[in-house]
Image (cartoon, rainbow, N blue to C red; front, side, top):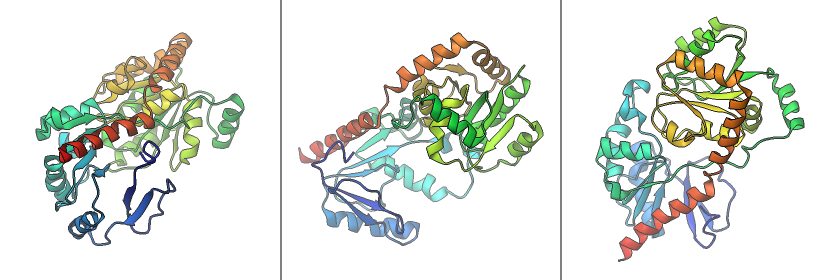
Length: 338
């Protein structure tokens, strides 16, 4: 956002002890109050009011508990916890039951990262469409087709197999890795399966199943994010069977790299992929097996998905996201000044 508006002075609050990111000289960094959760929310508004800003923008989807004296915009990324609470650990009642709903009621503008999230805002919280802006997330320029020498080096460095299906996500029930594991186990002449992502919660059964499947399945935990573009490039395809995503960055990153994508038919994933990937029922391992075998065994289909994926990913950029976010901020400032 700072790049899009170099003439705008911005103050960014960051957690204490966190290195402030480098950026424009017009960006000032201030520490968040060091108090615990409620204390922070009570102290923070006074610090914001002292700055006398034209607007306040929260990319984290929540507002301070007290009024801050200026128009407000928040971004909502994911409402999965309100769709199915058993997908998440207990112990978040203050945030999910009070702070988030209050923020949605009080924000002058709510940005949703997908039309699916916008629909959830209306259905679950009654946020009127007139207060919602849909601003898709973008994809970094780091995610692009790479040259053969770079890929040869990466394959050797990471000890990746010649042919593999890729899964990229935190390992937890909501990501539905179980369906992919069952489908992969049923494949004829199956490629290897590479799982990239850390352990989330309630993963014990998934981990046991991964261990039983044995050879051909590799878990890359703690992968350096800088290596991820090469891993996408080297994969035969990305399989993303999640039950719910607020947006779904891994399919977008994979498409930008020219990797064929298969996603589930739920939440925002068909919206992100469009006609550039295969869309499969999340609850059907047999349908997933058929899709995996189709991409692995049909070179023409894979080439077509690669071509369409690159074109689709080009429609998403962080520059566009920043411009649309500024549009939302400008709108609330204009209304407050009218």
